[in-house]
Image (cartoon, rainbow, N blue to C red):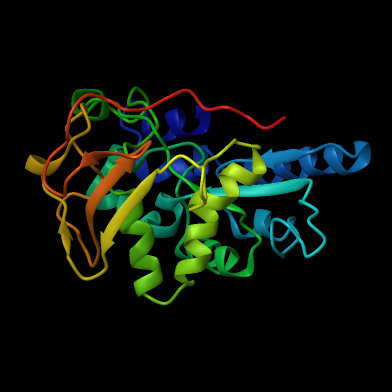
Length: 261
């Protein structure tokens, strides 16, 4: 940041964010954490993988092997790293400012491959609904983070439609794996006796992201103007209808998670 301030003053372009939040820092910190975990036999889950180099530090293969043994060291990335790349700063600016930074198209391609190869075990979201006004500030003052929950699934399904990985891969990364990795009780699978957290999807129903359809209280999305092939037709939370394809139904239905530990 100091070098950027010296060069640009208070008018730091947002496309400098991948340099300020550098790939080298990501690689070194992940390498250090993995080295310590392997040395001490510690379980470790690394969040928000954003570079091709980091991915090579993780072993490919299923989260749970044929003997029922789970990986001790696991990796997670986010849907925005599958979708955006450095060239998008020009049109979206601070709206895609996040930490770690969205980087090169080659990193995006490597992350998409890593999902298919099972180097990435969990696919998640950023979850930072900063206001529009906050994001309009100069780069140095604008907060990092994106509101992604509403479009997460249709964006991830688009990567299936585009042939990057299979639908079973996606279901594993966003549903089964979080429940398995964190021992969440009675969630993450369609099984008798489990809580019915379900999403009904129309694969070719189409979703166009517009400001008027955004449900997040911050009122904006980095996907505005984009079209995805799939549409969420219904969402059930704990067995109760929460979204009917057009509107939210009833009061919030979430419950505290329980862990099988």
